[in-house]
Length: 496
Image (cartoon, rainbow, N blue to C red; front, top):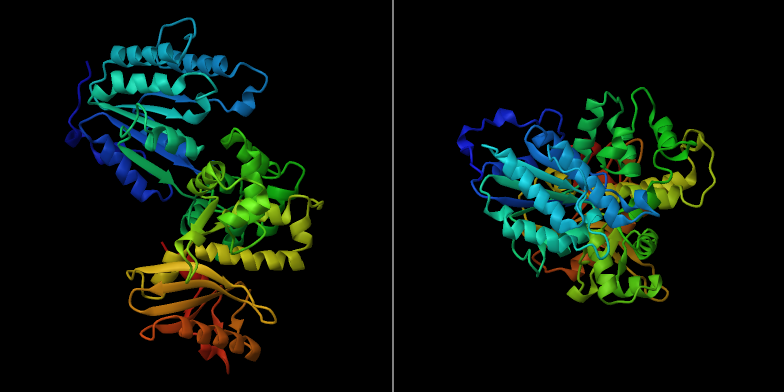
């Protein structure tokens, strides 16, 4: 029988948080769950390489009663997947003290052995069981889910001191089989924690911890190229310039991220081809595509399959959906937001470039075009910081990019970000990536005034339409700069 050490006796100092960047909310939630007096099943999920395993290991590493990581199917090609997964599970059981010499014949027996191991340990304090990359363990026709249901419902859920954390990068598997299960695990997950990529602030903190010295301007460009993915950022070495770093990550012979795109999707999805097809399509247009357009242009039927693909990509922070200004619910748009994918598909895939490409072509036209688009994307991922810098962080709003297709003989119109606020103010945000103060020319002011006039005609007369500039080094004041009521700079994007 298990006994519970009362949580009030567990000092906060026992948690290992000194090397964890950010994740404050997640840490608070996990430590609160640890202190509960009932069995807890926790699902942690998020994009691959985002730091899920690191967070759990650093927080609970001296509290594990059992820890196991599923083996990637990519590493098991040509083998019996079920046999290989059972073999590695058996090894983990032995590592934590199980005395069985032969591997279990199936998952029912494997989880029975885990139960016996935990009973034998007879822990007198909170026992943490961590099963990492659980989706990989559910190989075809293995009976894994049935066995796990039996383990949890038949025994584990009754052990008041047990905290079972399951983790995975295949977020759709976690959602379908655990969080939204209608089978034996219906309503059994006590907490779901989605880990998102780092913000610019957290990216800067991680680089400081690695003793990497780069200006915020260069950190922003690095973020635009790899995103806030801790594993990718860990490849950045001290003493190298931004140009050298990008070359080392993408263009050198042994570049860490040169083959990452294929590995990334192949490791998450059993049939990765349609997912990559959708990602490549969404990379072509900044504002994204509607569901109908995605189906038509990708060849994926607009039914259950497309729903599954879009939901899985959204849950893993590769894409996001939004409702464009003045559009119906049926016309939701899907856009690619993962910086790594955007950079790889725009600047790496299908291009034959030398090992020093970035150093030799820092001001190449294609890179300048990419910078403009990537900066918009980075800003959209920091809308909260933009609103805070504007002094309206506590005001609720609907935020989205917006594009108006031009009618015959007329130009279209694009607004990088519309912030439609509940206090009846609409901010039209323009995003400009430049290496000096941004200067407004006469023709650009005229363009902005046309956008203001159009928006004024299409919102309630009670709304006040304002222009906001989001840029790197601020606004150069002059004859036409008064068009902007607010200016948000690079420093504000790095705010906590």
